Length: 286
Image (cartoon, rainbow, N blue to C red; front, side):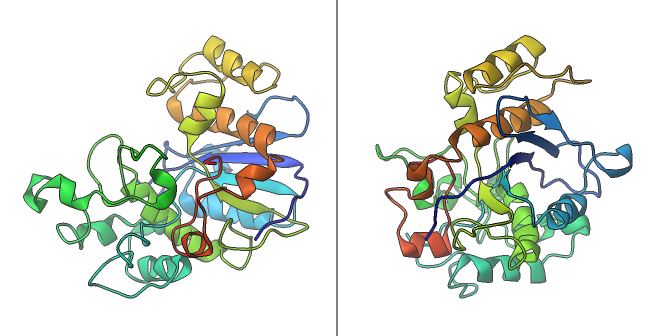
C-alpha cells in the first residue's frame, strides 16, 4: 500500500469546522529537514486562514516533497456497522462519503455544520434533545486502543469543547477537492514524488515530547521550546501569541519530521485493506 520515500518539508495544520469565512482556529506550521524549528505560515492578506485558502495553498505545492498532516478525522466509522451513515446512504468507501458530504453541504468556506444539523438525532448528537449520548458513540478502528478504550469524542458527537465532528466533516469537503490531486494516505498508494497528506492527532505529537495524557496544551515560549527540543528541534522564533492552535501546529510539524521515516507507522498492525479504504487511519497510531 505504501513505499518508503524522502520528504523535504513537513506541514501540520490545526483545523477548524467553525462557521464563517476566516477562522482563528486554523494554524499552518512548516519545517524542513534537519533541526531548524517549524515556523507558522501567515495566511494570505494577513487575515485568519479560510479553509479554501488552505486548500489552495496545498494545491499550489502539490509537486513538492511535502508531508502534510491535517488534525481532523478523515472518515467516519464504517467497519463495526457496515456503513458510515446507516439507513441513509450506501457509501462503500471514504471517497464516496466525502463526495456525499460535499454534495449535501451548502455552508460557506467548505463548512459542514448544516450537514450535521440536518441529521441530528439520527446520526449526530448535538444535545440532550437528541436522546442518550451513548447511542451515538461509535469509533473507527484506529480510535480504539488495544485495551478496548476509545478516544473521548467521535465524529458523531458534535457537542462540547472536545468534539471533532464539525471540523472533520468540513475537512472531508476539502479532502474531496484534494482527491486525485494529492495522494491521501492510506486511501492512495505512496507516490515517489510530490506531496502526501495524512491524518494526524496533535495529542500524539504532544505525548511524544513527554507530556502527560490530558495535559498536552502549550501556552508559553519555554514549554514550546522544551517540547521542540524533545523532538530534535532548535528553539523557535518568538510568536506574537501562544495559543493552542499555533503551538499544536508547531509541535506536530516537528513531530512529523521526526517520525516520517518510521516504516512501521506507514504499515500499522491493525489496518486492513477494508479499514484503509473505508475509515482510514491516524498517522502515528501503531
